[in-house]
Image 1 (spheres, rainbow, N blue to C red):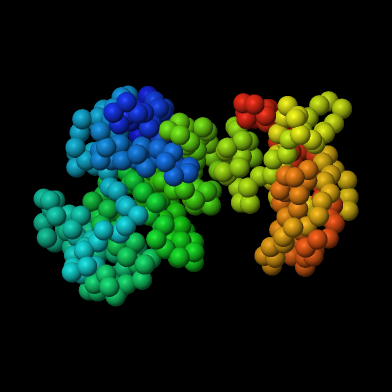
Image 2 (cartoon, one colour):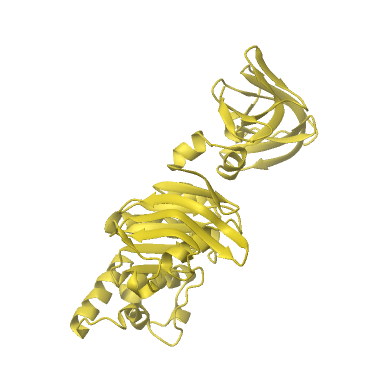
Length: 343
């Protein structure tokens, strides 16, 4: 296992900087998830850690040693890609064992390590099969097994679940998390899916345009976003943001205010009542989800989403009221989009 340190890390293509001098320390055994939209630099950062992209500036340390100039094979890390990249003509045993191709272990020790890895991943009964006879989730486990068998200092995952359907993604999220709990190996994981980030990470790193906007635990990022982008990116459905003014004498919603007032849909409740924020509007759409219903309506031409109990399904075109309790509101500066506090 190893810690990973990024100091002023830069990636430049010609005159274009795509990663702008980022700083981050990943602790030994920590599960860190880089999250952000396409093109934000998260996969490029991962590939620099792996040694698949040259570092244009800054310093990268793995286990306390500078590795800027080291080849990927010299960094003792293992990478799992979005595409499984397993060999169709090989059995599961051969695919997992391929990670030991250059190892100096004896064949007996190689077989022992393959069997141990297969047992951990629940692949023992499939060792003789070829990939065509496996499900998507099983193929991804084979790819993980090929990385695991090398006993690396760190695992790097580059959107490994993107090709799976929703049910398999949920299953694999749990399996990878359990794997980390069992092995305790450092994991750096890249995804554009904030649900993956929230459910898997010890710490989330939010990136945008080659910069790190915020790093923290999932609940810290969710409860205390540093800016508008993070507030809207983390959490599903996205946070509602309304222009207005937050002053000592209360809140005023309206265009041209110096602030953006944020409230998460789960904190904005449909029904009669009072709170620090009350909104009214006409229903434009509803999303019944069973346990709750998401209710869409407009406030001063701004789309808003609120929640109602699952059995309460307002009709489109009807008038609704929604309210949020004290402490549920986020205040941002409308110009800088930086967080100013909670109300």
